Each structure stands twice: as structure tokens, then as C-alpha cells.
Image (cartoon, rainbow, N blue to C red; front, top):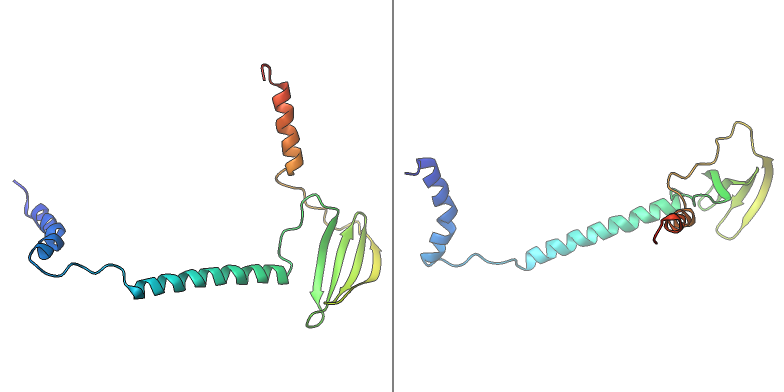
Length: 143
């Protein structure tokens, strides 16, 4: 024999089937309002992605190229579209004035001794990884 709680759970699970069999209308499928809500949510997510990309580009928060010889050290907005940027090129720092029309060299400095070292790539570059795989294949006997 089934206990009363098991009978209640089974009856609750069968209730939509019993109601439908009794002649009531079938539950309606997704309507136009559901489609509109889904479309609105999709557009909202796509808009957030575009806004985040514009924000990262505007404030130079994108990661720099790993292993490159050029690195932006610092930058500050001095006007609506004007910036002063310090760029490291090998062992010297360039102070640049950047506008929407031009980039001007303002000053050249030697790299300070207390400057942070360039970032070491956590992941090897693609060329290094490919060379390592090819070397392993050549060293493998029977390959």
C-alpha cells in the first residue's frame, strides 16, 4: 500500500492530465509576449557587450600584446579628447600628447631604475608553443 503522502504527490503530478482529459482547454504555448520578452533580453545582453567593449577601448583597459616592444605605462585625460600618455619603447620612455588628429612627442626620458619590470607572459606565445610541439614530435621515436 502507498502512504497518503505518496498518493498526494501522485495526484498532484496527474492533476494537469486529469483536468485536460476532463475537457478543459489545453494550456497555451508561448505567445507573442514571451517572444517579445526574450527578444528584449537578448538585445539588452548584446547592448551590454557593446558598451563594455567601448568602455574598455575608451579607457585603454584592453590587455597589451604580450612580448611586444611597446608598452603604455600611464595616461591621463587633459581635455575632452586630449591625453598625455607615457609609452615605454625598449629602454626609454616617451611622453606623448595624443589628440583625435595627431600624436606629438612632448619629452623623452630614460627608463627609471625603480620602474616595474615588463610583464612576463603567463602563457607562452603561439610561436614558442608550436616550436615546442614540433620539437617533441621530432624527438619521439617511431613518429
